[in-house]
Image 1 (cartoon, rainbow, N blue to C red):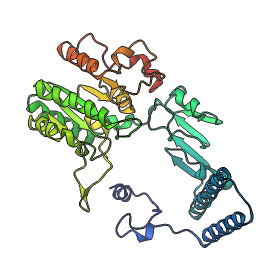
Image 2 (cartoon, one colour):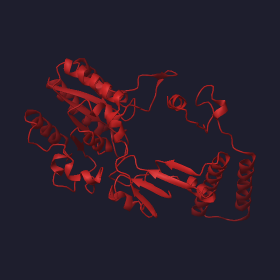
Image 3 (cartoon, rainbow, N blue to C red):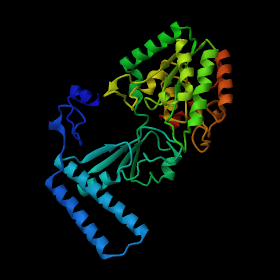
Image 4 (cartoon, rainbow, N blue to C red):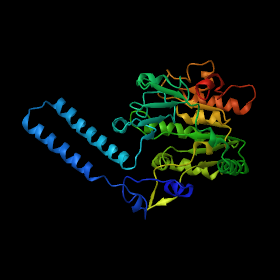
Length: 360
C-alpha cells in the first residue's frame, strides 16, 4: 500500500531488501563492492584480535557490539553515498545513521510523532536536529538526555493536517451513522496497547476491555469503537471472544482492523488512523498514549487509564488531572456514567489547561 501510494504521487524510492514488493527489482538497492570489502576487513581484524588476546566477558561484549556498530555505519554510509543522500529524517534514534552522515557532512533530523510518559527508545538520541511539538513537550526528553543537542526546534503538533482530511471525515461519519442507526446515543472510542509482560500485562488488557464491553451490552445508549494498536490483538484474547461477539451483535460495537489478508495471515500492522475512531465518537479512552492528545486536539474529549502510575507527566501536573487520568478503572467508568447523564458543565477529558504543551 505504501509503495503504491509513493508511485501514485510520483516519488522516487529505494528498497533495502528484496522480495518486499512484486516486480520492484529495479528499485532494490544492493551494497557496493567497497562495502563488502569493508565488512570482510572488519571481520578479519576482529578475528585476529580475538586470537591474539585474552578478553574478559565484559570486554568481549563491548567488542562484539562495537563490531556491529561499525558494520552498521559502513552500511548506512554506503547507502547514503550511492544516492547522494545528505539529509535523513527519522522517528527513532539511529546512531549508526547519524555517524555515517557525520562522515559525509550530512544531517540527521528527528521528528516527534508521539508523546511518552517514560524514557522511550524512540527518543532522539544521536540526531543533529530535533523537531518537538513544544520545548517542554516531555520531561522524559531530559531524562533520556535527548535535549543535549545544539538544535532542538519547536514544530507544534505536526499531524493536525489530518483533522480536515475529507476521506477520513467521510469514513468517521459512516462509522458513527452505523452505530447511531443501531441505537447508540453516546459513542466511546477505545484504544489499547500491545500486550507486554512488563507494561501491558494480559490481565490488565483483559480487565480494560471487559469493563467497556460489558457496559456497552448493559447500557443500550452506548456505542463502542475499538481501535487496536496491533491488528490481531483482540483475536488473541481467547477469554473475551464470546464477549466480543455478544457486543458486536448489538450493532453498537465496531472493531477497526485491516481486513486485507496477505498470504493467509492477518497483517500485524493496523494502518487505520486513530483519528478515524476518535472523530466518530463523543469520548476517547486510551492507555496513556498520544491518541488521547490527538483526539482532544481534533475536538473530542479524551481520558486515560493509567495502571502504570506514571505520575510525573503532564496529565498529572494540572488542575484538571482528576478529570483526565484514572488509576482505577471502576472510578473511570463511574465518571463516564455521570458524564453520560449530564455532559454539560463538566471538564471530563478537557486538556485546555495543558494545551500549550501539546500544540502551541
